[in-house]
Image 1 (spheres, helix red, strand yellow):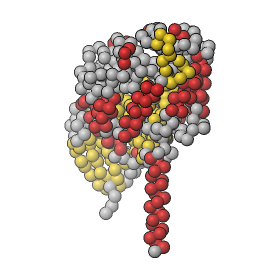
Image 2 (spheres, one colour):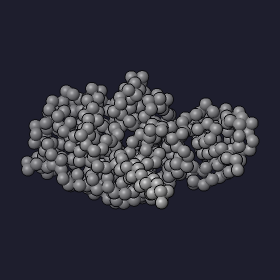
Image 3 (cartoon, rainbow, N blue to C red):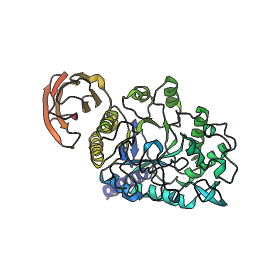
Image 4 (cartoon, helix red, strand yellow):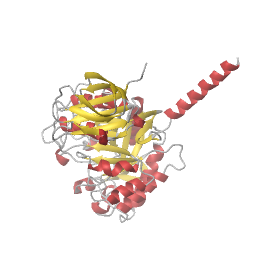
Length: 473
């Protein structure tokens, strides 16, 4: 009887622990801060997602979109709050989800009774959030949560063009509060008059409304390294970090680091305790990785583009980034448009990126490959490569030396990889990154220790390799 009671207590404690893990917002993994802990499991986030307008564009059927991500086992999407949005034709994007028909535009603030908004309808009241917008945003988060999809919600963005400021509710011409009497270059600075207080209020109101969601973290501002004041960034990160002090849950904050790394930028990212995720854009050559990996944050490649419409550049960038220690990869996928929310649209020539069903499948193989390892014990280990790097190519290695190795090889069509392994026996599996199939399985028996020569099967342009210690019977 005593034994039965004991095991019943153990079972109850386990259920309580699992429930607590399931209700806790996504966070850095305490066992390896370069990865997440989500629903009690080590997690990487991998996706090929739409251009951030799924909520503010009322014509966009986000359920179909989320279903397509879920069908490919992709688990992340990036979303703009609506403080910033675009106009048709901006950046050469055809059928831009972030540039909705004005009649379908849903923005965070409530409309007033006063006409005069530049795109039609009434002006905005920056003191109040819009009920219809909040309902759509919360439903999007809930539907994403049901599918195991994490949402990065971007609160602000630089205004790249005058037209984007001209239609912003933060522009005094578009609100009834007399707020935002400043040029667009000063909108995201401390020298923006009474707009600063409205921006602080927006953060506090929105984070309060969304506090219950666990599949959510925030990025304060998109691409701040273009022309946004560092003082404003620091101030607003502090506002966001303290906005949840009196609330039940606390969510992670991401910071978008400069595309050209600097020592000062690395120091800020490393030393700011409020920042948990470091976002990077157009990280083709992995220069930022060496700067920011020692900071002990999750490294996130959360926007690709400007490398043509074909799939392959974004396939390669995903594999080499994640196998260098990244925790997030988000291909900006222009095959998701209104009417083709399942990602079936053909990407128009001239669009600054790609996206396709095929690419989403290939990214699902990357995610599954990483999830097959004891993730939190992996760290970059390129120093273990002793030879066999293809001409003009590269080799990336994540390893728990002596136990497990995740390896990506880019370039050539066949190689003999030389990698330093401790004494022992190992199982090897060569993964076709295009099909997800295992092209070759090997056993390396009784390796004496030191460099091991591992011949690959033929491949088209890249291949992945898993090495695991072979446990004795």
